[in-house]
Image 1 (cartoon, protein in one colour):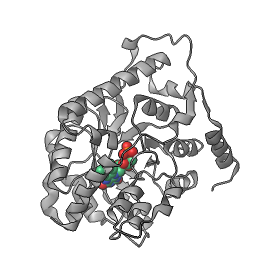
Image 2 (image 1 turned 120 degrees about the horizontal axis):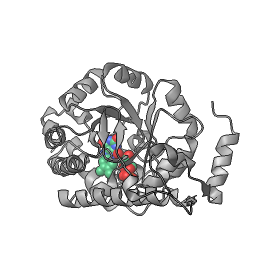
Image 3 (image 1 turned 60 degrees about the vertical axis):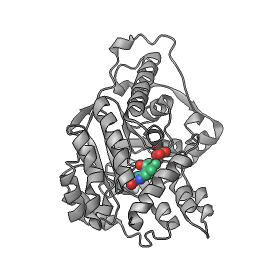
Length: 342
Ligand code: FNR
């Protein structure tokens, strides 16, 4: 097995093992419920348009894997569940295909199992625009995610050491015919960085906050010595990223990072997210397609219940829900909004 394929398997194993309960700080956000919601459960639909396709819920399976035999098994199950429930799904980084084209099946399986569903392809920021366009075409991807994972690369002994990424990101966006989403991988995007990405023409952003899968920890676990634990201090939680996006949101804002419950999804939407990405929670249930389907159905049913409790019949009324923040989060919110960021 190649070093790259081995890394994909290590990620699956370590991410599954190191996933613990959420510190995404959404528990510091408290919702205020109307006493008279004036709604019936039958009035509620979670159906929503994601770029070119209608999906059955505002949450999706975020990028995880591809590039090994194990990855193929996981992608098959994820894709079967996504197809059955009509939720969107992202594949893990396909940049491995530049050097190892024989790994294509571990990605292609997702399209084969889900020919009509919404599928995101995913590449790293160094991928050549030509390869990115080829990957989108081969997978018939509906959109392309590009991960911005500086901290992960730094901790990886074999990771990137050159972070001149912006020009290539723009070139990829110009070369592919589908929307491009820039995403963090669980370390968060600050208010200032978000404004910078927007000013460079990127309007679809997944804030990828901390509180769930933490690649600094995962990569530190793969290191035998010289662990770079000091990097943990640089994380920005999902709740903080969402608050940071409120003043000047991108056209499509995606919340992710430590999303494990329907309440996390609901709070993300109320804080301003248009969609919510969930990775590791799905990995925890990926021992069978049936378990994945049950999880998706449970999240949908609970989210519908939350919409009912709060009298939400359409997504636009989510912004009317009042909430308050615990003092630590409120303090952060005040600080980022008094400091000029652009
Ligand atoms: C990931 N993630 C990820 N992201 C990405 O853009 N490309 C990738 O190839 C991968 N690979 C990957 C493997 C595994 C096993 C996991 C669990 C995650 C990151 C993922 O999409 C997400 O941003 C983070 O995991 C945070 O979300 P959760 O896991 O806390 O819901």
